[in-house]
Image (cartoon, rainbow, N blue to C red):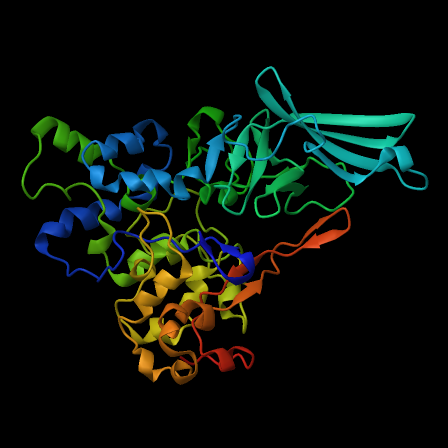
Length: 420
């Protein structure tokens, strides 16, 4: 996450290997990497039992331990007192009041209360009139979202996953209606599709032949975005080093090193989740393997062709519209972002801009002076509200704002021209 002007928060595009990455040249020694990267979809699916946990990777790759402090491993977690950010206190901070039932006349009242019982956490809806109240309560089973911007919660109904009606907004430190739920309704029925889970977990096995159905094998869920999501299956790589011991030149055998992939294949790894929420899968979720072409897995995102794509989760699609990206054969997400480390403040990212651009060439340099060197992002990547999610909670609309990754000259933003 990075914080922009006005307190806006943004989920940044995934970095891949190091803060400044230049696409490596393929060598004969990388043939095994590419062969592993393009493994069959059939061999990839259903391999949760072969999943290698991050702590196994970190036994050798201790220099990447900072990854555990980033947002990606926290994109999904088990429900616990420490993982849920919202209050369950009895001082009223656990209540989301939509319309007080005690004052209900023409329409029924509604409120939600967050409850802790016997170590478990629940969301309970209370609706109706003072003498005629109905309730429904469901356990919080899964926490979705790192909490930098907020969290949403899921519950199991048999083998099916559903979104709970109340989410937590971190910036406002309060409970709000969950995405997709209409204000004032006692609804717990929004299904969680495999494509939703694909961007918030590392694996879950579907329990249906319908690739869009929300039926899963509970025990197959691998929480968070783990090392294998960017590096591919690590089983053979780990087995090699366990059986043969550390060997010079063997560090990249039987594993995908994104820095050895072409620029397009590197960006595809990020685009799996950071390319908007309109992407429709051609084959089942969790089939994509790092190193493969993403367009073999997902249909093109129609929002990318729009004159002004929405900023929600579409960092890659917007970046590709930038002249900076189109003019450089090597610029990718990790030119600015290091997926193994926490995000920086916006002023730091200006240093990435200045590896190609000169301060004195900026039209505002004479007006702003030296301080302009810390403000490239503030001017050229404007903050704007997303249209994808509009949270209307008790008549109070909330439209999250995000940094637009379409890099443009400020006076060209309003005209929609793609200049740099």
